[in-house]
Image 1: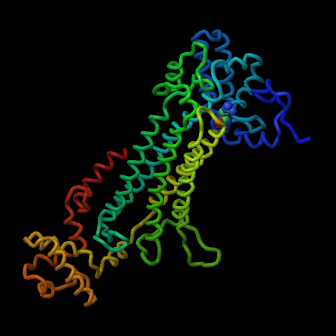
Image 2 (image 1 turned 180 degrees about the horizontal axis):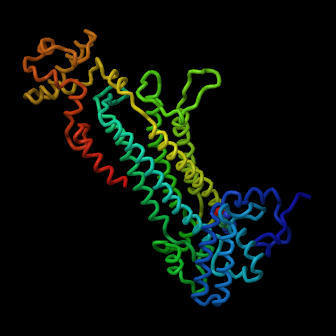
Image 3 (image 1 turned 45 degrees about the vertical axis):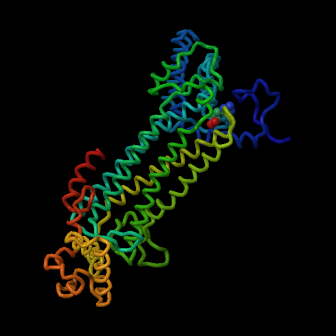
Length: 463
Ligand code: ARG
């Protein structure tokens, strides 16, 4: 005989004559991972018990007794939550503990509700809190990027397209680009929170209940913005978790791009930055190594968060309404994405706080190069030459400089005038990296004055 878990251990044992196979029990039990929703389960149960009393579904004494029992568990399980045993999930765990404390009264708590609306409620409460944690961690990372930008306001470096030198930019401008990305991530998290913050409880198993419940009261009690209006929708959909995962995924995508740049900048070929030692590791065989493991691991972990998103979408796509056990797969995906994204944000913030740009190296990267070519074209265009022709002339000058092994800023006026007699002595000073940067005065551009304005705006957005 295979081992069996006794039916007396179950919330649903009545219909069964024997116990459940131990292997199936272990396979479907979610307590090992959903126990982390213990506070949410107890808090939602307190609200439910209060409502059962207020509506007269239970007596005032019964309601008060249940609330006291639940609150005692809340206190007893702080701070680490309940012990993981062979209970099926956090809902059965709470009920079993309550039963032990209160006896038969505990059995009245489940009046007018089902685990289906209960789990959806707990999960929404948990992710709502997750959104608040993400927002705080995103802000922390923004602040670290901002501090790094402020510390490097006068550093000029090559800006790239196609990973080829394009036009020089202020390092601060480059870093602020990421601060704005994270600002939109915060908007997305806030937006996901709006739709997470709707109450499923009261949907019961799928169809509602005959008991005269007051869902609005429960919603108010738990801080939900509104109730979900359709009981089937309330228990069957997990679109809110998908949105949460999508928000985490976009944050991870942004962090991954930042980390890719950090890894490049820290390489010997660039050597633009000094990484803080605390965020690097050494090699067991090559004593000279200082590897950017923190940045690499963030880049790597983006893949796993995208996997969480795709996994849940795939789980959901074929499910008939309403609840199916497949939905239990939602939690590990969301918890993993939350833990991973929070950890990556915190590491990224710590790393950014310690990064120092090496001006000698960014300047060296700009020496003898051609990224002022657009300046020459713009200069001629301002003098009335059609931009396409001006572009051509500038291209010829680049070809000439290249053949001479010079950068554009190194060409003499005589050399420049070989290509157009519209060129005068006011052009060469416009070709240094600092001058090229200073010329980009359009709003959102990289001119120092514009970047200082941008800093003001972004500080207000970051908070
Ligand atoms: N552990 C389950 C889950 O996470 C709780 C809901 C169980 N409901 C049910 N009808 N079996 O989805």
